[in-house]
Length: 395
Image (tube, rainbow, N blue to C red; front, side):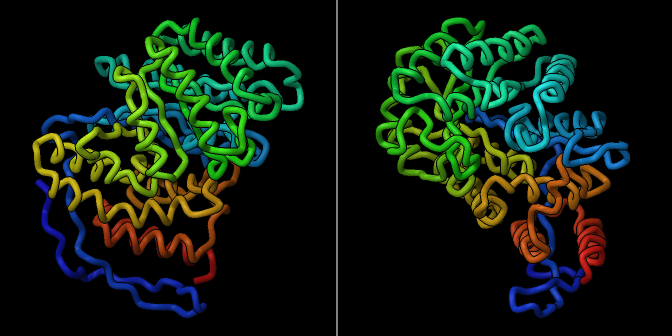
């Protein structure tokens, strides 16, 4: 059961402030969430999952990837225990920011195998075009062939597809017809319905003008036309635009058989709760960092306890907005830092050296917000680890 939040704990530590001062911060008493799903869910909820770097890998982190496969798969089992699906090899796993296609495919193969061993736990995996250097993409057919290659490899491993946005297509696609040609061709070949991923340029600047237009209204018209025309091949669409109004508008205009998966890490609580005209399912990077709370909140929503849902999930939103603040693409640092604080890995080392992508002040505020939301699973351990990171950074 979820225990009520108490006003204060006996734990404290010194944290830096924006004015360059140091404060003694006293933690709130923690909340305890079930380690496994309690009850049922009435939303499909995916956590995009991070990879755990191997800190002892003899590599140059900016150039070569070293993954701790045991800890990486163990984290996915933690997510599955909570009744959530895993969105594999996505941007949260640093796809395109340290994780290349060969390593991504190995991750997908290992994750799908682990899911099958658990009675076909829910996992969809990212298929993109990232093995094709953007500068080598000369024609639309080059993009189509690149998608086909990754889709074939994932389906051969027994995996389901999340059709990721393509940097190569963003670069050479000139209009709606170019996008229609790619998506119509690719969707016609998939074995099972896919999730289409629309990632905004705040997450990846190389995806500016996706769907062939700098205007979001026009881009959405193109996306909707493609998705609704191919509804039989589309399980759902995940949009990450951090614009709840556009998500709701698109959700109401989708074919009835197509799910909307919110990717809005700023407004997910209200979008999942929904309104009289519908609701969003979830495919969120922040669920990596808050999986136990998300699972418990979703179980309360399924039980008809909307107040309980908001009481648990609402306090997580300020943390998510902080982790995903601009430059949004560096949110992975905060997600992995939460995994470190909560004991899912023994180090704060990331693929690509991305542990350096956020400031000491950013990490200190993350700690405060996680504590206030009751998201530190073991406050004593989290405090000890926060102190170690601060000491390394001169605090």
